[in-house]
Amino acid sequence: MPATAPYACHPDASRGRLFPEEESTFRSPWQRDRDRIIHSSAFRRLKHKTQVFIEHEGDYYRTRLTHSIEVAQVARTIAGVLGLDTDLTEAVALAHDLGHPPFGHTGEEALDALMAPYGGFDHNAQAIRIVTRLERHYAGFDGLNLTWETLEGIAKHNGPVAPPVPYALAEYDARHDLELATHAGAEAQVAALSDDIAYSHHDLHDGLRAELFSTAELAELPVLCDCFAAVDRLWPGLDLYRRRHEALRRFFGVLVEDVIGEARAAIGRLAPRTVADIRHAGAMVVRFSPGLAGDLAVIRDFLFHRMYRAPGVVAMRAEVTQVVRDLFPLFMEHTGELPKQWRRDVDEAADETALARIVADYIAGMTDRFAIETHARLLGSDMVERTRALRG
Image 1 (spheres, one colour):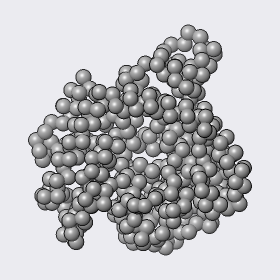
Image 2 (cartoon, helix red, strand yellow):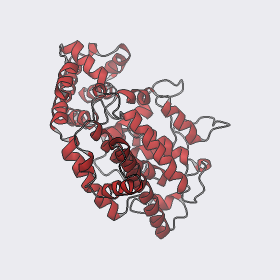
Image 3 (spheres, rainbow, N blue to C red):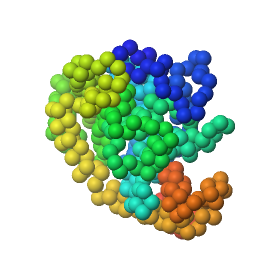
């Protein structure tokens, strides 16, 4: 859907690409960005990367790929209502998790600790590194050569990037200024809030399926209590599974409608005439209302204690953390274990920091399954069986 709002990003006014290319005759620059992201190797690998549960734990749980698709669906809806460019919004939404290593935030924390002497590790910065350097398929450049607006959205969809800027992001920003001190355009802000909506909704689904909490417990939480009450009025006696599905559908709708209403109000107060007004507003214009933000804080606290820190999940986190902790020093010391196409980079590494970044790139690109299999092959562990045993 083309943008209609004056404060939207308009494709004809794009700042272009680092490496100039002849534009498509039938796709906008941001449609082209979206398509390149979808066809990237990193996007395909999201299929086997953790959202909350380790990839092999079950076919029904969300992965980073299904999560990203859900985020993009929500983002297109909200962007269309607000008169924004839906293609740019979708491109940022689909790319926002490309930099996640295996095992979700657990893997990120482990890799960040290992990379602390070398500039640290941040999944948003790693996403920029992937789309500007590590995807090596095109003849004329490394990366995907995305437009400035898409790169801006990936880098700062959660807001301005304050110093110290993560190593991987600072490295690219020195070549191609993404104006990290300002907010991103409204399209990227929509992608960020759509991420919050998607995981707030689907983590409740997955937690119920994993039997980490009950439907009755959810029905006592803010917002959700009203959603369950509405379902019970409309369909008294509805079976358990349909009842909770209908309630969670309504919860999803409440979040989307709140963001749309609050964004319209914030934009109305700001009265932006250009996208620059959005970038320099000093605050996000796409956000939850204060009341709903408070209710979501209660729900997220519930999820933190009952799901993200459930004993089985914590035990699993310890197991997979050890996978990353074991692989990193192994590859640092035995670079010959890296695949052949990575060894040229190793040969060109100027110092230990450059080598550590290559090793981090390789591990971060692994899927859950491949990381566990590599650990078993090189270190003789049977992590799959141990993690399955933890789930009982």
